[in-house]
Length: 565
Image (cartoon, rainbow, N blue to C red; front, side, top):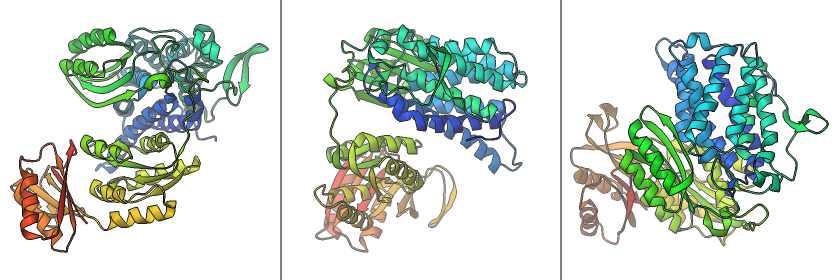
């Protein structure tokens, strides 16, 4: 659909590009997932690229919202927008291709956010940005291989170098060069030629560059591929032969003889010198190594057999966090196209957002697909949609377990329904309500009956949490100061105290005064020693016939979660 084109590079153009790129990847996601044959067959490159751009777009929107909420109601600068875009992509990068895309965007930001950035708002600035992007991405990969997204990025930059004119002219040239390079990838990598596919990561980059053209020209260009009867052929989609789940990577083996068992990704706070040593150590441990970022924050991606060693290397270099370890699975991720058996869909599954590693383990043991939401890092709708897909079921019950995630979960449910999955959203506001719902879940019942039963159990569970106040503020219980202990019941501050255990006892008494049969306690890592025993003893002494169950939640943000049902 045509839109009003942007005439030069500014913050609004960046915002528009991010939105159009996200939409383009959303449309192409399944196609890209289906053509991954190099080197790991885990079929999620399109999804990883989508989630990476979604994180970038969210960061840009946050910058605009911040300015709009300011006293002067101003607008962000180009530097503000591109830095937000690059940072959002960096912290949200998924998989090898997403990590490389984050570095491409970072390279562009380094040019467009430079002190003399006023001169970089036209075609010349875009040319420089695309060149820096391609060069920096290639440097980030330990062992670059031609026929991958790196080749496509370099070709786009080369084509842009030869273009004279405004941003639309340069963007069109870059897109054309990328399409030609994408069509050539099978001739560069034998594994692509044998499967009859182009590189999946490169295909995703073409979609992102098409969105760049649309930003400045007002309309998206057609996908171009080389053809025997002319320099370019217009095609609406890649051929049906381009099928088979696998993962596009920029380096590593050719994917036929197996490979490392784990994909390890984490964000890392570390100095440049430490990262240089980390690269050497990880390179010796495995393959598909990509380290992107700078200024103290890095995104690390590697395929290894010893996941623990890869994480330990990060600990030695600095502070790793948001650690994701994926086990590819023998005879699964490394199988060639057409050789991996299709897993039959389950009839029903539960997908739940959980605030800590301990609860994630608990939910997983109960048969749910858990989405980890660390403090300050709520999952985006794309991540929830991906979890619904990963559950691989015809019917899915979605538990957001947080009032703030209601709209995000609703958007994810709507998207999953559009893909033919029957999704029921139960508006759980706390993980303890999710536990109650999961306890009565029976896959053998009719879907509607199961949802009603789970909704009833969640609704009958009052929830509370004990947290530390971060700042002075007004509450329903009075004014609290930073460092005070707050007891929240059903989302509202009910108790302000100075001691964690005393505050927890007060909250528990308030909740049980209205009755109850079961108390659920979920302890955070920072909960004081012995608090669970103290609360259990209090329940036994004061409330006959009330049972107590205790779980370890891990790094869940709150010191303590309490449920009473």
